[in-house]
Length: 541
Image (cartoon, rainbow, N blue to C red; front, side, top):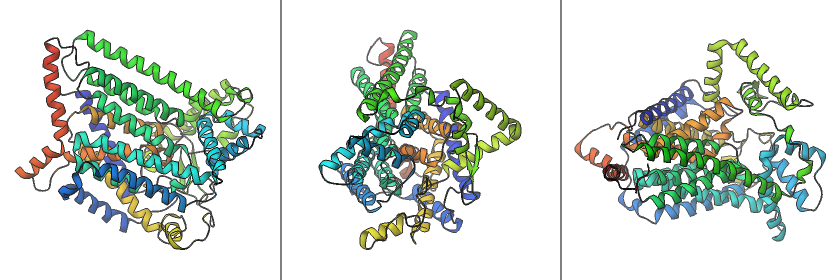
């Protein structure tokens, strides 16, 4: 049965995803590297044409290939990360240095505890880093030699989760393309050299969506309940590692609520589903808190020296997301990190921080007016989503000359391609930008015509969730990085609904082949609805 709310969510996501790349092609908001339209525009158009007309050969659609691509992709990612090792700064270095200190048996300084009190979300990262330092010490290796392969392992799991998410709806061809695009955008990124929460949370983000999508598909109730529980666990682990995966939990619950109205279901069963969603939300929060407590213990910090009142309230992050700034090169920033606002926390109580934040927001609204406020957040969305490199080399002093040591051979080649000052990096950034914009256009264009499907709505709402997060709160393009595989999966699913250049019986048949799983789901849904009407208890949503 059709769902007006579900279709509206698909169309809203589609319009949003089309708008961003159009702005990026016409009036890009650069992050730390400008993109040459002479390269980006024609390559983007070429990729769009290929998305419409290209077909994969039959030999690429075998069952073993997705696993091969996943393992090989993890190996490639590990190689790229190890070749790119450099002395990164900012939070990644701060936390790793703390892990080294604790593993060496030395206490953290007062400044360290001030930092952790301000950013307690980095305690799980500290626990992971400390485990990595311990393993590295036992193997007589540097910590990065252990933690970077962990990044690569996360890429391998992510690639297989992308396959699982796409193949059931769109078929093996689109799932393979989705894996390869994810490998290019994520598995070859300069970020692989930095052990941070983006990669550590990524498998749980994509895995949670894949598990929730399976749970929302019609089938035996015990199996679907088990999959839903696993999805909640994956969401909780992802949230414990990094804050942004909370949007997956919200998207899953919203999709489940929408789904109970896409067929005739007894009010009692609808109430049961809503109760189950409420219980899932409580379980998500409880698991998240438990995992955070466990991470604190595993990190080895003295919890008594943590100041819980130092962590800013939510409104401060919203205020920070409304601040404008400038890079060292004079380029504008929108709602990114602001040292003056961090300094303003000094000596204030939580209530004073909340009042300061409310006053800051009111002042920005007064200065900008309604039109200016909308323009600011529009610029912010274009700035965050219009960067196919996802803020690589933007943090701290990572882009400084000499960050990468001189090298020759394979290492030197990787430096030239992925290093910020490499001679091939501008072309690499242009091509990656074009690929990312093409992904957004395929996803958005397909969603403008796509029919209601639960799995598609889950993907769309997840993308809307991370977009809202990065627009309303402090954010930058790196915050999207863990969700890139979800966006690629959405594009692969929506691809089948793009307009065809030559509509024919054969192309329509191919369209049915690409969405055979979706049609099967629809058939099962119809049969399940009939069974529900006959009193069968096997279908909840």
